[in-house]
Image 1: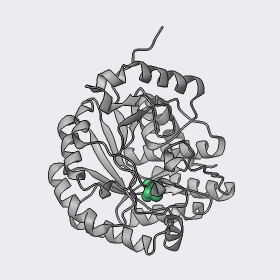
Image 2 (image 1 turned 30 degrees about the horizontal axis):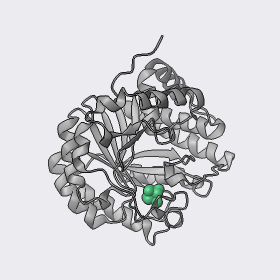
Image 3 (image 1 turned 90 degrees about the horizontal axis):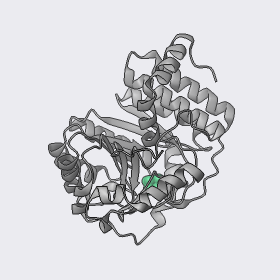
Image 4 (image 1 turned 135 degrees about the vertical axis):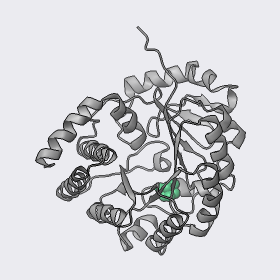
Length: 332
Ligand code: SF4
């Protein structure tokens, strides 16, 4: 029997591939010509969305980013929105955020920080990368922003800094998220990533971060500890701890308007510009074929968008893991 596909609740919107960083694990910054979706097209997104991540490239290089946020707020009123940025243009971002906060006061910003001090500069290929990012944190905090996080991408070069960046986030009153670099046709611009960090260091760092999160009395942080556990298992075995729903509960929309089941599932579901409504794309033949491919040949993935919907679907499993590890502590 065919499963009935509902409307999605989570998505990543890559609004541009223009980027002013030079990250070692990503080729997006080398893309010179890539069309960008006209803002009006974002009006087609469904009101069912509860989490939207605006990403890139560097999303603040789109000057119409406040207009995009306005459309998303009107079209998807129940959605939490987070903008992911490399944070290398603090003055520009501060200026745009003043406008954006008037539109959507609770909006979040995730600043990518892939190492402590010089290591971050080395990974990102940008002089004074750390100082620029900390300058941005301070500017945004002065605007009264609370929904701020540092986002760390684990690589062999920086794995030893994972706990230090986590500590820095806590010291500055910021949230902390992380990801594991993975290869795909469009994730990190299609670069082939050989991501095999030192296992002993990975275990030490993960145990530290998970135990710190579990020590708190904050549900969100417990869920983050579970997310970290899932990412640790993924990085070791390339398997997911929970099943998830690429192309059913969430999707990735690239800057041209082409939709994919997720950032790592590169089966086109169609271009939103070629459809009058979201439903025409979502329930169309290409979307159906893409979902079939995910089922038959799709790779495993554990990223915040794929994991969030999976965690929501399996609350008891997550609660049992949190309960056990909060009492006995995480040992890897
Ligand atoms: S990882 Fe992000 S910031 Fe770095 S080059 Fe790629 S798109 Fe730009």
